[in-house]
Amino acid sequence: EPRVQTALKYAGGVYLLYLAWCIFRAEGGTGGGTARPIGFGRALFLQFLNPKGWVFAFGALAAYTSVDGDPVLETAVITLVNATTCLISVVLWAGFGTVIGRWLERPHARKAFNALMAILLIVSLIPVFL
Image 1 (cartoon, rainbow, N blue to C red):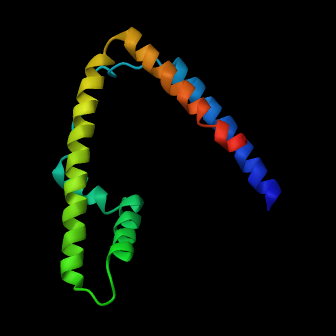
Image 2: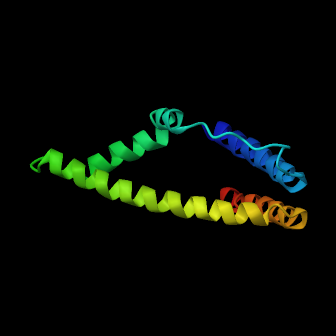
């Protein structure tokens, strides 16, 4: 239904503008303490609840296996490639997080970062309404 789609588009746009405003005004800070990590076991369990992970895994199996191929070998290759890519991504993401976390401890840097993120969120709406 086109009217429902239009209403959802505008409602979503208004919501994202509200989020951009909240991001822009956010003070940030550390919250007064250090968060305790959830631990390996719980983090592992959460991976089984990740719908994007399941879609990715099944999509990779559907796209990169063949009917007449060796399913164990093909699955092993897919798993190895995905695990390697994931490890590299996690290491880069953690390194970036550490660096930017130190930088964002400064109030002026945090305010500039929040302003940039708010602007980028607003700019991301442009293709939706063109």
